[in-house]
Image (cartoon, rainbow, N blue to C red; front, side, top):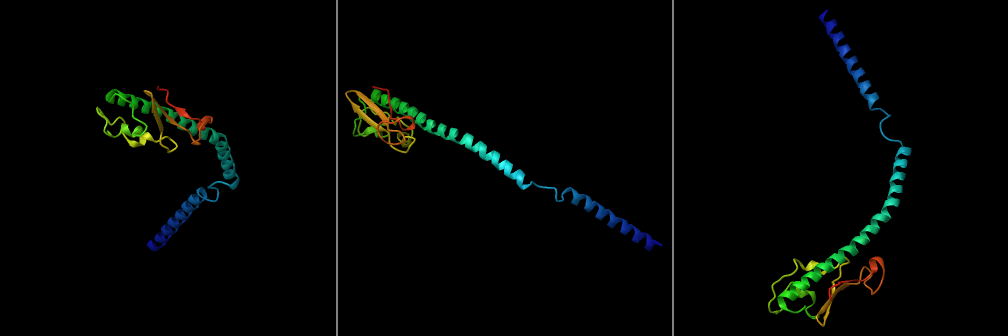
Length: 162
């Protein structure tokens, strides 16, 4: 009798396990996941957003480089003015802007007037141009194209200090 009850219990447990497995299988069955059409619709929406937003973002990057160059030129002009207050003259054309980082035998030099030499490089990777004459100086960059003239990001940027 006990053998029969034990067999019945085992059979019920195995039926419960199979019923439980069937329920879990139906939950995770073939209905899970995305169809190809759904994936294509999502990709089309992402591509549409990219074509609308992409050009605007790239335009902002170009404007940001020009704005950065203008700000750096103002900072360099301020450093040259500090150099002038200490030394009594602007750096000559030979020393260029390097005089803001190294004394180069200038009496009264109290620098460095810039933190790093990277400050002398414009956003397009070229050294800023420096010219001094008759108690005035000009710091400039030729923009993205590295040619005189131009508009937009290719425009020349000059210091306004005289």
